[in-house]
Amino acid sequence: MTYRITVFGTGYLGATHAACMAELGYEVIGVDVDTEKIAMLSAGKVPFYEPDLEPLLAKHVESGRLRFTTSYEEAAEFGDVHFVCVGTPQKKGEYAADLRYVDAVIDNLAPLLRRECLVVGKSTVPVGTAARLAERLAELAPGGDDAAVELAWNPEFLREGYAVQDTLHPDRLVIGVRSERAEKVLRDVYAPLLEAGVPIVVTDFATAELVKVSANAFLATKISFINAMAEVCEATGADVTHLAEALSYDPRIGGRFLQAGLGFGGGCLPKDIRAFMARAGELGADQALTFLREVDAINMRRRARMVDLAREQCDGSFLGKRIAVFGAAFKPNSDDIRDSPALNVAAQIQLQGGEVTVYDPKAMDNARKMFPSLAYADSAVEAAVGAHVVLHLTEWQEFREMEPELLNPVVAERRIVDGRNALDPVKWRQAGWVYRALGRP
Ligand SMILES: NC(=O)C1=CN([C@@H]2O[C@H](COP(=O)(O)OP(=O)(O)OC[C@H]3O[C@@H](n4cnc5c(N)ncnc54)[C@H](O)[C@@H]3O)[C@@H](O)[C@H]2O)C=CC1
Ligand SMILES: O=C(O)[C@H]1O[C@H](OP(=O)(O)OP(=O)(O)OC[C@H]2O[C@@H](n3ccc(=O)[nH]c3=O)[C@H](O)[C@@H]2O)[C@H](O)[C@@H](O)[C@@H]1O
Image 1 (tube, rainbow, N blue to C red):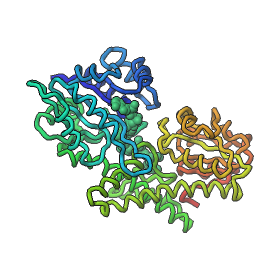
Image 2 (cartoon, rainbow, N blue to C red):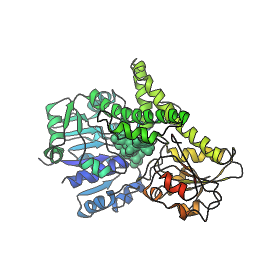
Image 3 (spheres, rainbow, N blue to C red):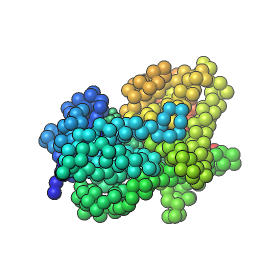
């Protein structure tokens, strides 16, 4: 059977999922409450930067296989499988996740479900959410003769910047189900991936939810581990990049996610480890996750250390000094600035009196909206004009490959702090620059 698919929430996850489901051959409707977003998507335009997504989305919008709407009624009538991809941000002033958007989808969709269908959660949620939503769905969905409405949980592991690739060629699929029927529907939907050899883990709701947050907790821990080593390297004059390289040859450790620097940011790792701690506390298992507090603290200390290093390069005070910041996105190949370490550092330096000018290849519009008081330049060279120090905070290819000679004529002083350990110190020093980095001499 071929299924008709809907996707609720058309942000970084949902828009990608919708376009990729169309690519797998399904008819798809994407649903969002943001009318501007829906208008753009309906015109085949992606409202954010994600490599490879726009051509894929435009192709399927043009063919009519992929549509977008704000109408829950239209989606409810259309869909056999409804994916829930709305945001689960950190609550203000708390560690816990804000589940109001996920709840709203179920509350608004359930009463409209008059035909057999499967509602599949993809958003990242605290363990126990799926069981609660399943109850809510059963309560609110009209019970007709042929209305068999069920819930499943299918967490997502894609990385921004590689979202299309990761969705079409995932490392694994994880599905939390309560019936053979739900398992069969999801196995059918993902048949093209399963046939290509993607492993699948079929489990219960709670385990499926936990796989997601434990994966992100592990990744965050790996980054904070190497950043803790960077702190020790700084204390002894050792080089964390050599240390990480040496560790990486041990296949039990592996080299990925051992890039020391300014640490992790974004819309997921920071809020997910905090929500995980909050949930463990509610379950009386908070002791199990106390190490995540340290993971978070190590991560936040890197930002403070970056500000200190920058201040040192400004002879002890930012007052009257110009600081060029290269990078605003939380990582390269994305325009996402949620909890961006780069902008956090830029804002702290401005608060301490520095004149900060930011340049990013893709995240300028988002950065301007969120940090309107920072100054922005149209190019790296323009940002560096008159700079007493250049801070390299997001490792875009453009910065990694930059020739220092390009900046030589414009900067006030040749000083650079590499917050991502991604520049070649030899090249910069040979061009007459003072090169400093986190975790290296
Ligand atoms: N961004 C990523 O790389 C990944 C995100 N996730 C998880 O996926 C979820 C979504 O994340 P993002 O896509 O990054 O968030 P996002 O903020 O980019 O997108 C969320 C979308 O949901 C829409 N929305 C809010 N309320 C709605 C409602 N009642 N009905 C329909 N649409 C509604 C918003 O307007 C927005 O467009 C989160 O739980 C996140 O942790 C999981 C894996 C990867
Ligand atoms: O749940 C999510 O939303 C996603 O969160 C992360 O994906 P993402 O946030 O897109 O980006 P990552 O590539 O994981 O990078 C996260 C942060 O860690 C930093 N990082 C990454 C790797 C590293 O070695 N060092 C390091 O500081 C990056 O600069 C970035 O700020 C996970 O990698 C995805 O598997 C997951 O699906």
